[in-house]
Length: 83
Picture 1 (cartoon, one colour):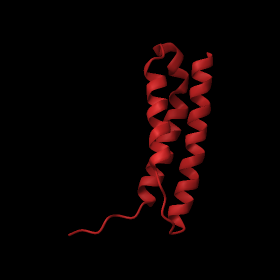
Picture 2: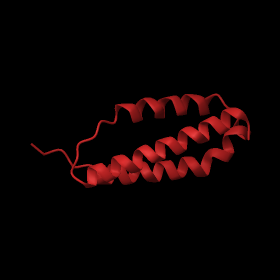
Picture 3: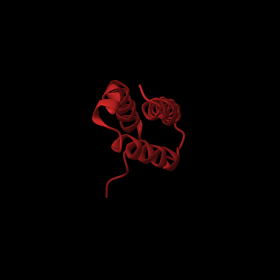
C-alpha cells in the first residue's frame, strides 16, 4: 500500500472514530455538529479520487465499514418535525 493509500486509511479510521462518538452522543440525546465530519469526508473523497484504481482498491473494505458507521449515525439522528 502506497503512502497516499496509507494516509487515506488513517483518515478513514479517524472518521470511523468520529462517527462512533457522534452516534453515541446522539443516542444519549445530545446535539452534534457534523461540519468537521463533512470537511474531512470531502478531503478523503478528493484524495481517493486522484489515486490510481489499483492503489485505491485495497481501501474498499474500510470505506464500506465507514459507510455502515455513517448509516448507523443517520439512523440514530432524530427526524425533523413534519409540518
